[in-house]
Length: 277
Ligand code: A2P
Image 1: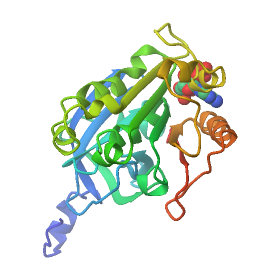
Image 2: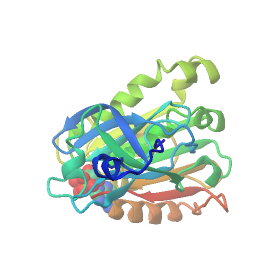
Image 3: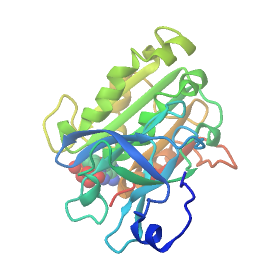
């Protein structure tokens, strides 16, 4: 909160401008030359649903805030906020954002919104989280959200990336779930057996190669996962990746008979675009 000061000529000149909605960076981790994650302090008044996004950014050279939509990657109960970002070397925001250090400030508009929320889906047996690249972020939140395991018997997370190193952030989250105190306490030990993680790469050798869309079309993904193709009776899905992926998968899900839902009208699946520079 800004302290009120009597505005005399001296204080008006000397006062350093404080960023509006400033939050402090607490941690930064780099994964590849294209990807990093960071944590910031959470405004006390900020309430959000796991899966939603907010606008964050930095002050631009012209003195105006430069903001982009970022999915909150931390769960709703966490006392800090986590974000997962691409680095674009000539991107207006991420060319600068990639250099933040603990102690620096970022701007965060505390108005969370988004469609990748449990409220937008009808009850089901199995939930699919489909991600490419940094589209993993909202699922990093939802995978740490107890409601995900309360609502579903099976939780399938697919992540398609170009290279193996781009899977690290997601894999770390998945690996940490077993030890997650809250989930073990609320859902019970062994909750993680509900999770099926299906990472694939398209441009570097890894145990499972190919786009998830192709692997579903051929039936290979269902065979690997030991589940039948999606059906509106049992399956719910959330999609978050690059635009072409979102559109292609949306069409495929419609082909399985799933209907797109919204906060105001829950259905079988929801889709969000990845927020790239
Ligand atoms: P590919 O390497 O075959 O293009 P990007 O980094 O460009 O956002 O892509 C992330 C991942 O999403 C890549 O592995 C890419 O595969 C994959 N991808 C891109 N478009 C589609 C699509 N329409 N359907 C499925 N996967 C896609």
